[in-house]
Length: 542
Ligand code: VG1
Ligand code: CO
Image 1 (cartoon, rainbow, N blue to C red):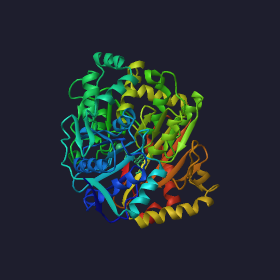
Image 2: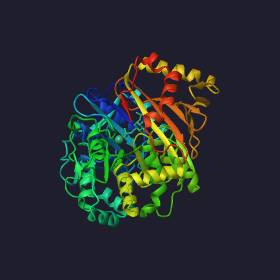
Image 3: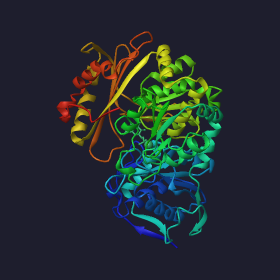
């Protein structure tokens, strides 16, 4: 019954920041998805009789790859597959499902915030038993296997009905089609004070949630409208579409511009939020007040004790290196450790497992906690709602009070997309070579204090990750960070992260571009962005 199929290795299946992401057309090459899935299965132990969770963000190719993966799981000895109805599981819900079903791991099918459709992007990520993205040693083993794979295993079995809840058999393996929302919504209800939020809603508190035609629609309808009582229509673009309606499901000020306009306009509700393709990111905007993701992390950490799930306090706060240092100041005040990790959620898993950190975040609109092992968009939205309900304050008030207490880290990220790979590599190489000569040099009013290539030693297992971004630190706590994206599917994306610290009592409510002008000019001078890329301005500013 098990069939072994010969195949040829593809050279380009190296997982990036968050799994393997390629154009749909690349995935449609013969055996392309099969090769990668078999390489995952070959790289992991303990499959016999084990449970595997499968789900995705509903994008183009989601259902087809799920059927392929189910047959291959059966041929590779798994005892059970748990799959979300309709092939749907948001990334945090998949993480939760892996944990509560004590699965060996899970396949999360998504290219997150990248657009979907026949000419757009698809992705496959493997998550381990703790529910989190596979750490580097596992992704390296998967990649090594993709380089020499010669065959994969599958069974001859028809597609299962992904829309019919219940259990069926595929070549002797149980396949369970489960409600993708219920367990996740129950978890949220345990962490947050739903009664207090519902009471605020009764009292007229209103919000707008933009699901961007991506996976959070069903979750937001259930949690916000059904369980918390927000009026119908609170959730916008709430039906997951295979092409996300032709949009980038990326919750930032460029791609969620409509929500931003609403929140800055005269008819703004109290609170606005959006999530991304796979539901792990969040955008938070108060009436008339945008909160940067780095600030949101700091503000959530400072107020988390107001939510029942965090009432006993936090053990530590972790942030990715390019994320602003705002959260570090909160950690210092709370007297708990602050950790700085490379970009990507896989680096938080060990800290969370070891009980060293409770809340984690990234500047790219990712925030989460030890409740799962992924960043979690709706979780962040609900923690904000809990804090607003508990304090009766507005987002603007929370933000101003936070800055008055801790100072403000003005922050922006400039993305240069679709740069020729050789040019981007040349820029980074020249920059790296220049780092040792930078300390002591001045750029306008800024003087470099230190410059290095970020490396991380995991405090739990001693593993070291090098070349995680070039940072230039200026006197006074400002800095610029440069790195290349590891999630794109064509050319290179240069990310330039700009940060300026303004202490309490200083200029706390100014325009971010103004405050970052000197650092932006210094970044150009240091890296020669125009000289290397021919670009005079970034494509996206977040
Ligand atoms: C980007 C973000 C990073 C995030 C990653 C996955 O990676 O910068 O912070 O963890 O996407 O997020 P990169 O390598 O392109 O900078 V998601 O929502 O795509 O799973
Ligand atoms: Co995502």
